[in-house]
Length: 224
Ligand SMILES: [Zn+2]
Image (cartoon, rainbow, N blue to C red; front, side):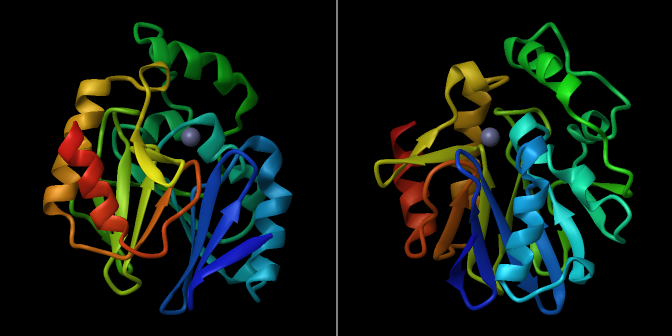
């Protein structure tokens, strides 16, 4: 099931984690790919929004984590390009293992045994790179290669796990789930400062905001 957040923006509530679908001027874009068992739900959501599987053009990933890349193999054999921040890319492709030297990395190492790398091409994004109407902003902390995306065309920010929503407010990424909470806090502040203001803001977990997204993030930034 998907829920429309705007004319061309849909929210996947995958029970515990979010993904989003955007009709980006004819380029159908999935943002994040759920857990390994979410492939069918992701494909069903395309139909709910009025599309077919072959309509999908690209997948933007906010970061490498079990609950955001797990469903990628469901799109093997379909002509899509996967985009991810450059520091998380080698983990998505399986070229590198998550580092055991960091508590979050060690957790990722355990979880990665349940993950398959996608067959589709993986393109790396640096800060400021654009894909269609989306601009990538490096927002490290939760993971080293975490990126958030902004599309002014859709007045939309996809925040991944830089923040989550809880009780109608944004919360920062907690220590247990973060590589570096200080860096994560700095990312919230820097992103708030430099990203254009948008209405719709979709976090990786919790309920998206359809109005005042940037303002709400700014409120959190002011407390960090
Ligand atoms: Zn997550």
